[in-house]
Length: 114
Figure (cartoon, rainbow, N blue to C red):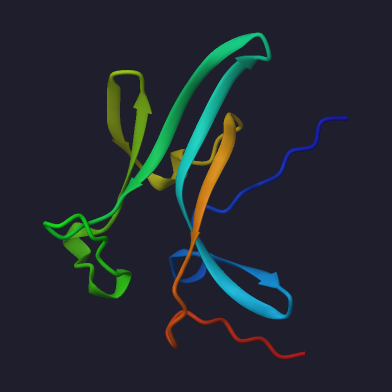
């Protein structure tokens, strides 16, 4: 029986949390590799998040990003590339997901009580 999992593109505060040994961390998706075809052949494409960077290539922290320079998703297929809406990132063709853990700040730490 085939099982499909849903994955999170964005959630509360632009990320999602996973519980790890009693602590919660916030993760952001930044790339997806897609595969269509079978085991003996197929085609790969990718979706990547373009984030604003300084002239030195250092990523701008989310708290400093201006709304006019918000991150955009791009779809890549061989030589072809286009900007896509976030809703088109999560597809059944998703094969490899790339997440990065956010540096915890008081604004993005999720607190839960039991």
